[in-house]
Length: 259
Image (cartoon, rainbow, N blue to C red; front, top):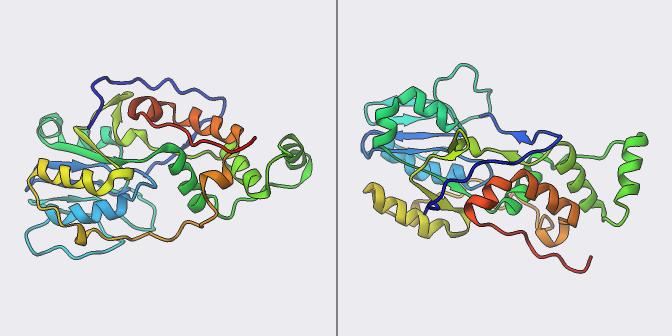
């Protein structure tokens, strides 16, 4: 459930975090709900589960990629590999833009939710995806970085460099408007099934866990773990980038071994 208090975003940094501009979103007129899609949170699988309730009965078929769909039953934003372009509805669409396009009255009446995840795990998952080919450049800058963090292993160093110069994906605009939480409920990645069952009851649809697809399972390397990659400076960078999420949702950093 959402915390009772609304937490303002006071995160600041000399380097702006990586902003994710475009994931799928759903609007169901049949069941009066809105789903906003976050990054690296099993969002595509969750979205695919709820897509069927945005179409007339019997029309839905599972698909990893999907063109924009709009009918009296609901709206499914574009989900694909091509740029969003001038599409009206698209994947990873900010909450404020959805609200603007559907109007205040519909926004207030519909039940709104998304998936969140422990930021420290989210950063690892993002690194495994967005940073899988990241490398530390040569030259004086790369040498300085290596010398400054000489106690890090090779992968720890690569992760830290990615965090420093690229940063994890920041997508809080999917669940906040003007730095205020704007949804009715949240699904936590860590309790996905139980939370989805609760959401299904809230919006009046059936919960059938066997129908939840796993589009991207198994992609992350077994070595991409907190114990393998996190160092004190990496923890500080992620904690700073996700200060809002940590304060609002009560997440804590992983415990490190011996320094």
